[in-house]
Length: 112
Image (cartoon, rainbow, N blue to C red):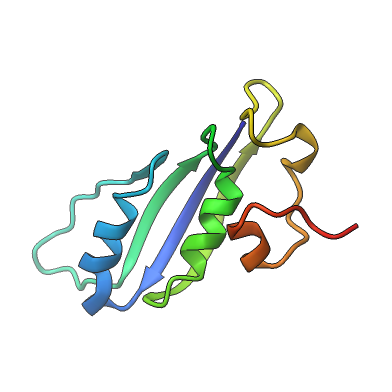
């Protein structure tokens, strides 16, 4: 099982569209935050991504990073462990970050 804490950065003008798209992804939670009325909208969204039976959390993060409206993603927390592995994700791929974003988004393992 993998759990990722990710900061998704977008332009403040695109924030509502990215937020709406993120909410459509199964296994993803958006950290709700209270923002004071006078605080500037800086385009950052904090999301938590968990493995699902269909996709590994790393693949979801890679897919989000490739969205045209997303400027970048920052992994700020990661938990990986064999305690409850996804049926679609072999245990040996939990720490496998050595592939391209495109390959990770498609769920392809890295080349050996």
